[in-house]
Image (cartoon, rainbow, N blue to C red; front, side, top):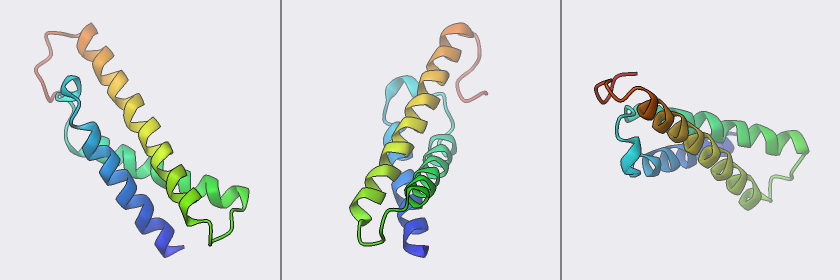
Length: 95
C-alpha cells in the first residue's frame, strides 16, 4: 500500500514536470500539472486495486499510474491552451 502511494506520487510528479516542458503550457503555474499528475496517478492506483490486481504485478500498477497521470496533465494542458486562445489579453501565470 505504501509503495503504491510512493510510486503514484513519483509517477505523477515526473509526468507533471514533463508536462511543463510543453511550450504552449508555460502560462500554467508549475505546481498545477504536478498536482494534477499526482492526483491522477493516485486515481490510477485506486483503479488498479479496484480491479484486484495482485501485488506482484507492480509493473501494471505503475503503467496505469503513468497513464492516468498523462491523461490528466494532457487534459489540463489542452484546457490551458484553449483558455489562452479565448483570452489572449490575460497575462501569463494568471488563472
